[in-house]
Amino acid sequence: MKDVFGSVSLIASNDQSSTLSNNTDANSVCTAILSTNENTTRIPFVTIQTDKRALTHEEKVTRAECIWAMTTAQLGFSFNSSQFLPEIFQCMFPDSQIAADYSLRQRKLSYVVSHGTSYYFTNELIKDVCKAYGFSLLFDKTTIAGVRKQLDIFFRYWSEAKNCICVRFYKSIILGHATADIISRSIIDSLKADGIDITKMLMLGRDNPNVNKRIEEILNKEIIAERKKKSSSMLVSGLISIGSCPLHVIHGSFRKGIKCTVWFIDEALNDMWFWFSRSAARRQDFKIVANNINEISCRFLNRFVDS
Image (cartoon, rainbow, N blue to C red; front, side, top):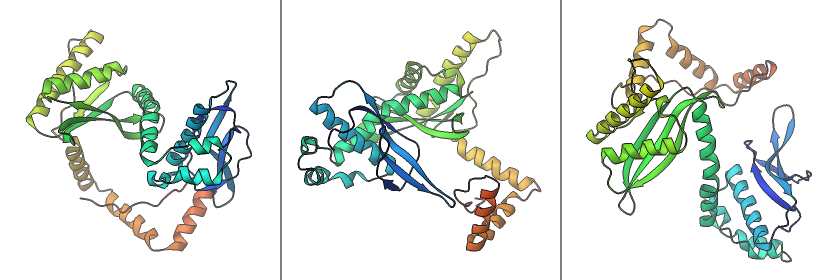
């Protein structure tokens, strides 16, 4: 906890780890040991970068709290694990004034993690969504504690970074009146304020109350108007409409498609699951073969259920 790192900024890596080791790198706080079948890899999970500016005592305390907050988030510690951490650090480092002034407990820790990192992750989400060719917007509103109405907005899109379909939380908006005009305007203003092109919106995910039908109509008109500004064609389409809940329709279509084909996909997946489900030897052989062909085997298939 003493000031042995100099003036630093924090970086949390994307690699998860479970075993810690002593730090030997001058540019990192600590490293993690990641064990595999063949070798052991040392991965930094919290990295600090040196800065020439000298820190005040308050900034050193804040830096120490931020280091622990990033460590908690990266390693998946519970917030309650920090309940008595200030007293523990004071006992461990009685000669450190930073440890004496350290005050990060569970509630403050949750605020640091959520509010301190939300700006960064929201910007990363916006960058990823802007790279996509299109996205679906999912929203839901509910009355929360304090008799307030909360509008939650999500994106479903193809992520170029992760190379898969992602469903990501975007933001929550607190409302008083929650009419269709207010909700639709809140959604449009939020997207435009963050530089997200609303003409890329493909469809709207919602439940079935009448106010949500009106929201879809308003958004559809807005998107058609924006697309007309960009296109000289007279034929401009709006949102794709396949019902109130797209998941149910698509799931039913997928199930119908499986039944109509003669590929027996469901039976093949079930056979694969049963083949590995009760045999440790088969699982070990599968991992050996996967490693030999440079494939990463993280987990086995869940059982396929044709519901």
